[in-house]
Image (cartoon, rainbow over all chains, first blue to last red; front, side):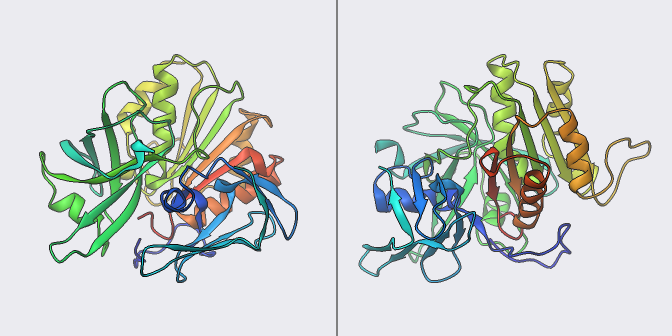
Length: 97
Length: 245
């Protein structure tokens, strides 16, 4: 995506926020299956929801998924130069697979 | 997961929807079908090996043919969409994988009314739902609230008129934020809380909402819907980022 200069119709919030759905393809690469309808629980606030409902931030190195309720980090995923992934799942109490 | 290997899609048709939006019809060599709301990843590879990857929503309803339509907005200064708009011709091939996503989907199984809220090209995955609903003869009440800048920017305008003329429970409500035609009776402003409250009078509190468009619109609409009494789990969102890449 590209920022452009046309004035926005809606006030700028964090305009770079996406939904986890947007990184569903990468999640398939990591987990081997579609994760967006998978239930998970946020370790910070206890919210249970589908992975697809999380917020995705793709402009940092790697991908950060945050809880849609408390906005804390649930998953961090980094793709390494050799094509493998590092998954930091400290923010998830569980992921039901 | 065989369906998620990269495969070489062939462009079978190109269609201008608006001055900035084009529909690409693709034939997929191995396509197991999709659910309304799903997307595909598209990958372009330059001669030097540089790759650019984007996700695009499928606009067509599921069918038994290995064909899908992607409706794509040309993003000024974009890396991928200007190529798709200006360079691509019928017969060209590029890599696609999908269908992807099991969260932002509606396949007609639930009986609850649906409230679809779109900003600009955010209408694309919602159109797949609207088309699918018509195709299966679903009587589920469906409201589409669709924000565009000007009348010329309304994607699928004629088809939406035709579909709502069937009087089968589909309501299409337009909001035009920048310019309105003479005699315009629809909304003439951005989608806001009071507009959503009016629209929700016709859909009720049981509605499952799907909101798709640029991130600022989605944030504002999703927050308003929850303020108006929908549970967060009744509001599914698909944010496009700042401009809807």
